[in-house]
Each structure stands twice: as structure tokens, then as C-alpha cells.
Length: 253
Ligand SMILES: Cc1cc2nc3c(=O)[nH]c(=O)nc-3n(C[C@H](O)[C@H](O)[C@H](O)COP(=O)(O)OP(=O)(O)OC[C@H]3O[C@@H](n4cnc5c(N)ncnc54)[C@H](O)[C@@H]3O)c2cc1C
Ligand code: FES
Image 1 (tube, helix red, strand yellow):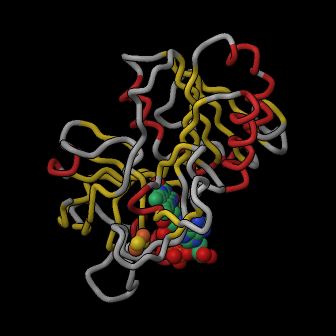
Image 2 (spheres, protein in one colour):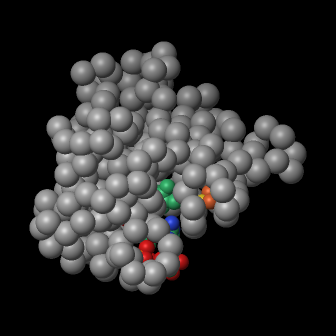
């Protein structure tokens, strides 16, 4: 795990409110895995006090990429970082996706900003497995397909692609999904992850989800990010250390 100040080399607005930030950080680029995250101090000062967690979106040679939407103070500051500004990164943190299981088709399901970890996962998988990607959003402007391949889109309001949720769209494709040995990789808001879990349990699909919650330390010290274990009553796991990626069998969503 590194604590390192690295220069921003580009901050690009991909679509309304969505930014892609490129950072020169060979130390982290050479070791980080898809699904892991960084805890970012956005300013040197004590305000904002806490670091902000971001998934690793992509890695290209010595560069890493973050994909974020502007939510509050931290992401406003990040979105205005000029070229050459240093940002303080802590990571790699957490457990990423397990890509080594026995399956032929990787099914990626992303809801809104849940797209963030998938460009890197797609890069890791694309020479080894077939990939099918389902991307959803409330409407067209929430749909992020950056860095993904073989994409089908769903929007709640029907402004792009299939009208319905991303899980409804997966159900529409059930026969195709059942015709292969698949593994589902999902990230998005908790209600979407619950629906993905239900769908995968019903159909006996192996599935990992990348979860989110408020965090402070990012590495297991503050106990501030509990998620209920599905295997042991009254037992809690830590999203930052035991996750953020979990097999759906292991956690209550
Ligand atoms: C493991 C992990 C990975 C993440 N990866 C990404 C990513 O790749 N891209 C990205 O854009 N975001 C990601 N997030 C969420 C991101 O950390 C928050 O959006 C960010 O901290 C907001 O900081 P802020 O200072 O801009 O907003 P704040 O001022 O801290 O918050 C603004 C508003 O957003 C709400 N909020 C803050 N965090 C979250 C959250 N996690 N979920 C829902 N609402 C929240 C707050 O309650 C508040 O209402 C991730 C979170 C986790 C735990
Ligand atoms: S954020 Fe501190 S223990 Fe998880």
C-alpha cells in the first residue's frame, strides 16, 4: 500500500457532471487490480478532512484513471485540478474482482457511476473471456459506456436503449445468458445490486458485486464501513478491507 503524491496529467469532462482524471502514478499502476480502490486526499489542507474513496477505473502504462461524478466538496475540488497538480493517493485498497473462476462469458452489469471499475476489468478480461456488458441509468445522460465493449443499454425512462432497469434487460437476455457458463460482475446503487442478486440466485449464476458505503480510513482501522455477512448471524464484514468486491453469497445487500 502506498501513500503517494502524484501529478494529475489530464482532467476531462466525459459528459454532464462526469469526469475522467488521468494521474501519473507508476507505483500504483503496476500493482493495482480491477475492483480495488484508492482513498484520495483532495487538498493538502484539513478541509475536507476525510479522504474520498474512488475505484480504479483504468490503467494505461504508468497512468491510472479515476471516473467520478460531482457530488460535493471533494469531487468539485478534484474536477478543477489543473495539469500538474499533485493529489495524495492511498492505495491500492480492498479486494478486487476474482477473474480466475471457471466461466466462458463475463457478464458486466453497471448502473450509473457503477460503470467506474469496468474499463479496467474489461481490459483484464478481454483476451481471456467473452464479454457482454449491460449498462443502465435513469436516463440517457446517466449512461456511462466509457471503456466497455459489447454494450447493451437500458434507461428507466427509455431515452436510450431498452426501457426498464438494467436487470430487466438482463432478464430479456436470459436465454443467451443461460446458454453459456457465465460469471456476473456488478456495480451500482444498492437497490440495483439487490435486484442483480435476486436474478443471479434465481438462475444459479456466479456473481460478484462491488459495494459502496461511506468510508473514513479505507483500510480496516475505524470500523466505519460494516456490511452484514450472509454466512454468520450478527457478523459484519468491512467494505474497505473484506470488499468492496464480494461474492453475492457472502453479504446481505
Ligand atoms: C469503494 C468505493 C468506491 C467508489 N468509487 C467511486 C468512483 O469510482 N467514482 C465516483 O464518482 N464515486 C465513487 N465512490 C463514491 C465517492 O467516494 C463519493 O461520491 C465521494 O466520496 C463524494 O465526495 P464529495 O466530497 O464530492 O461529496 P460529499 O460532500 O462527501 O457528499 C455529497 C453527497 O453525496 C453523498 N455521498 C457521499 N458518498 C456517497 C456514496 N458512497 N454513495 C452515495 N452517496 C454518497 C453524501 O451523503 C452527500 O449527500 C466510491 C465509494 C466507495 C466506498
Ligand atoms: S473505512 Fe475504516 S474500517 Fe473501513
